[in-house]
Image (tube, rainbow, N blue to C red; front, side, top):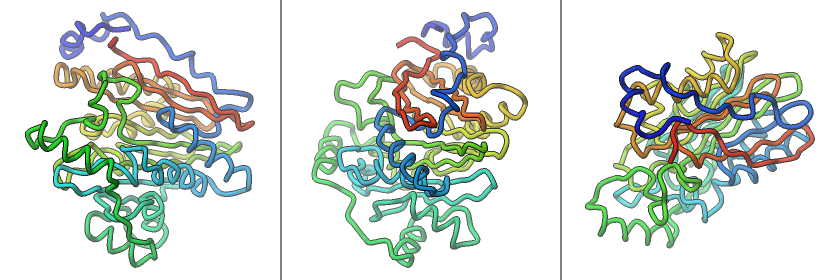
Length: 335
């Protein structure tokens, strides 16, 4: 486990002389036959259950990851995804999402408004348009044209939090502000997205990622979540990866594409997640002090990788028998 004092050493390219981070119970998969569904954070357990239920009913991987993502999107108590998400600094709740399979089929939306299930709109972009991403007003108009109902996403609780923020934060966006109460950097509450990965017994893969983004962000800000290769990447025969945390640090390095590329070169899912987190630390140095970024990866055999910058990152694993367990990701730095 690397201490905080080692941050400058990492920035100076001295990773090789630092104590090695502890491995995450190796890359052995959960349960017999490996992991079936994998998602970020402890609230991912309910998303996993929904995805697994669809798979058990014979649905496709895309059906499953969409169903899983829809669970937190519809939860008004989850202030980082979908309905009830915290707004931007102008008071608008905007959603980002991406869905992808291992054949390169992908759809995404960014800055979508007045629509609960951004993941479902992203799927329609994939299936009903020649494009891979729609944004802003165009994404919202597309959602209406596709029959998605208009709904105000700003709940009274989220609106109150926003108005309180306007008087205390000097109108500046703050990373992970949704957890500023009793928040410790990198803690279990320090999250702003959900990413899901799923596999079939034959090794086929798919994934989804959905979020309301950074609380009180500048209007128009888009993080890593809807961007292929940043918030999500899936490749047949190689693996899938998703990310969570401060999206700007993921987009700088196309984080999930890098994880999958490392897996393609022969690294395990775990080693690939570790490599990308160490790269962020080396590249960014003190700029990432107090910042959380975490990665999850899944290979075609069901082996899992998970690694993060700071302690507190949790993830949910559902095995082939439908058993779901919550795990703590190993971190590069101590609190």
